[in-house]
Length: 354
Image 1 (tube, rainbow, N blue to C red):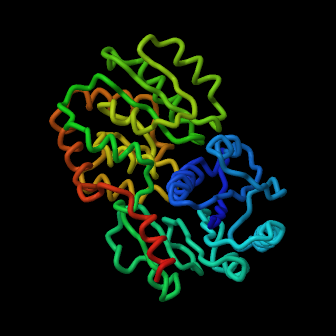
Image 2: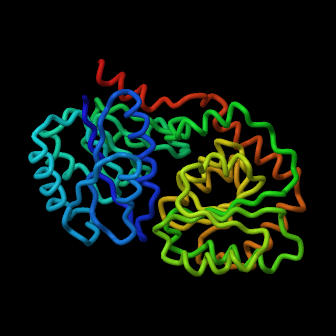
């Protein structure tokens, strides 16, 4: 059985998106006969339990503090030690980490057959065979060209989004949203480091007219989950879910969403869900701006300029402007009109066969 090793971290500050998209890829590769394991740091808010629940082994690097770009040699050395102790060949090393660059990858290259990097910053060099950036970019053709080896295959754009099979299944059954706002979805990522969920819940408590149903989703890494549970319990039409594995169903059932940028934004666009987006991290700004310019989302700007009043007004706007939500629905679906099946794994298999 061919072996894939993922080097990825999750924490309250890093968020959970890196691990979740790696899990999606690991699930797809398992269907093709690959075994996967995860190498992670045991940071506050890590997703070790979730990884193991999905059937994968986690090997921990004993450092408890996050590493920093340019100071990753110790992390690379620890990863090499783990690979040596496994005493078996590694076909793919897949890296999803903003603090890992070419220097780290050069140390690991002799111990693996192929290296794949998942990135969206384009702010550092990589030594890899395959690079995936799922965001929408105007400079798609030239992006990363000077940052990766000539032989590296670059997969850039939302058409390469890593999605579970349930997204494709639901998209085939999806009908165009008709404009009614009866179901609101609130999801600001697994850890929600800027506490947007609480702001949104306070906004809902101030509305004169509320949607018939509001679904609030948080991750197990959310440090405010006790308070969020308390707030949700005070509102009749709000239901809270923690660490779901059926996000596609929640998106398909919703009429409008409040959320952050990143992968979750593209998941909502894939299923045509109109949404208002808050930028909660530097790496989200470019993609949120691009999605808004395309007409697929409304951007609320940076989190520190967003308050409960902002969310209250945007929900009121969404409820009063069904035609604008229908337009967003169409533009979001248009972004993915040719995405009827996952294609990243096809590219991985093609590289092995070349």
